[in-house]
Length: 104
Image (tube, rainbow, N blue to C red; front, top):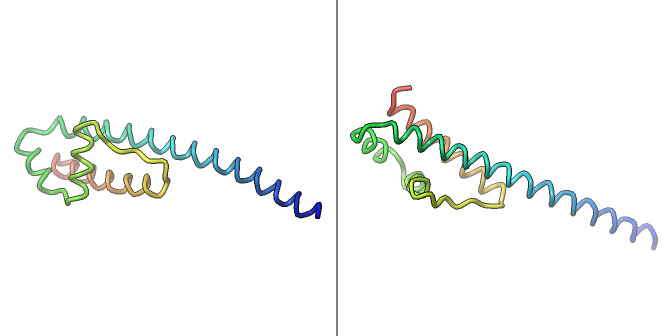
C-alpha cells in the first residue's frame, strides 16, 4: 500500500517538473520564432518591389499564410512544441527563399 502511494507521489512530482520544463521550452522557442520573424521582415523590407513580388509568388500556400501573418504582426504563437517546430521549419523555408531572391 505504501509503495503505491509513494509511486503515485513520485509520478506527480515528475509530472509537475516536466510540465514546467515543457512550458519554459515552449516560451524559449516562441522567443526564437519572434526574433526569426524580425530577421525575415528586415530581409524582406530590403528587397525592391520586383523582388518582393517574385518572392511572394515563390511561396506555397501555407508559407504565404505564415508570411502574411508576419507582415501583419499577427503571427500565432503556440504552447505546443510540435506545432512550434512545424512553424520553425516553414519559417526556415521562407528564409531560404528570401536568400535565393536576394542572391545570398
